Image (cartoon, rainbow, N blue to C red; front, top):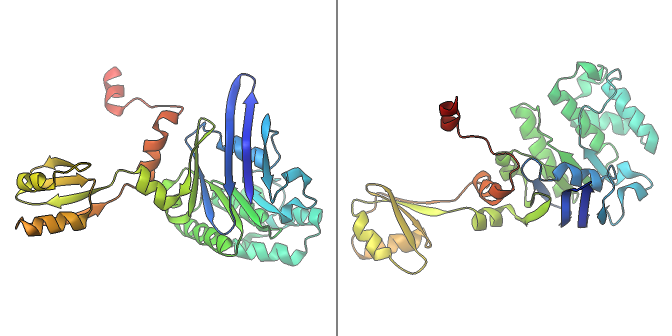
Length: 309
């Protein structure tokens, strides 16, 4: 497991990570989310021993990263895809890493194949596109066949085929029982990939839950109803906890009850329904609602910016 306990990091008077605690368990893809400036990168760096915490602890497999005798076999990480000597070929970059842990050439060839880089293994990295660099970084993360995987923005620079590939790869790694932690700003991709979410804002934990529960509890869901007797149905649905709004003539948005109850109520009173559609907020909207007060930078609305100009 990956675990942060009361993790805190200060740079002078500024607290970047503040008493953060969470556990990433095997067998799931955990999305690590937060707005810019939330402390995600600093947290990942502390997990991987690149930054020392001011207080608290960060462990992988029950130990600090630096204490593992062969860390590549314990955790594979991608934080910065461009952290590669540009004059090396992809093959020799991976071989250099492999030599540090006694990893055989066959494993290098295997991860080149897994990441789709076999045909360009002999090319120098300086000629790689951003997407190819991402694939090489993921190959390096997989090199030691680790039990835990930590990836920061793994789909950055990938084309649609590459995005689908990394999505399936992460799910397959979790299905093998590995611990997978993925930081990303792409809510649509996290909605398709992640099973669990750890969300932080201003260095503090905001949510630690499943994707399904987060969207259900944080998102604003409602039932859309189209009926020629909107006023009558609104009266019939009136009850404690039920909220009915009318965004346009003949259209109702009902919160606090479900579609089955609405349909049965309408049928019992012969109210015709032309549409009865449950809707749920997207992960993106739920995330925006939760983190609104934790966003570091707020842009001026376009219309106001134009007026100011």
